[in-house]
Image (tube, rainbow, N blue to C red; front, side, top):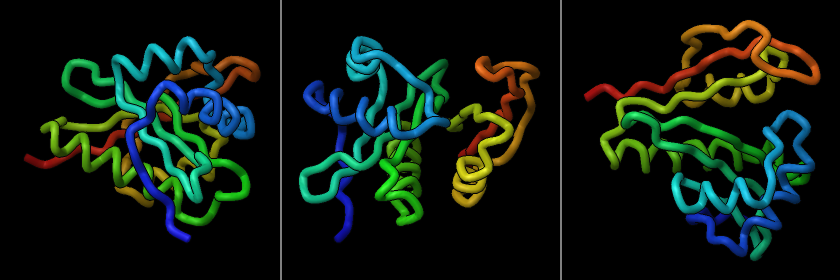
Length: 147
């Protein structure tokens, strides 16, 4: 059964939190932080049979989009949900004439890095000791749109 993608609404925050809590590599935020992002950023959810199974959220900073978080529920991983979310976010960013989508990811998060690379993101730089608990470098990726 295919997933449906749509913009998130405030009532989606509890299921978004539930998906996020099942993704150790995701950023862990509060309900208030997600609520604020719903008003100021872009949050897209993937649902199947009325159940949220993944999400991606981004902020627009100086015209560029920055992915803040992306997570897929364990039962839906390796089924293309993350890719669908990235394609939808990319489509929206291009429609808004964004020059790029940026993100940072833990160096050790190979599944996420492979997903981003598969969808055209390229390594641009590193941030030493960017993450805490545990301390780890971040790899900065960008998907640049040719205009």
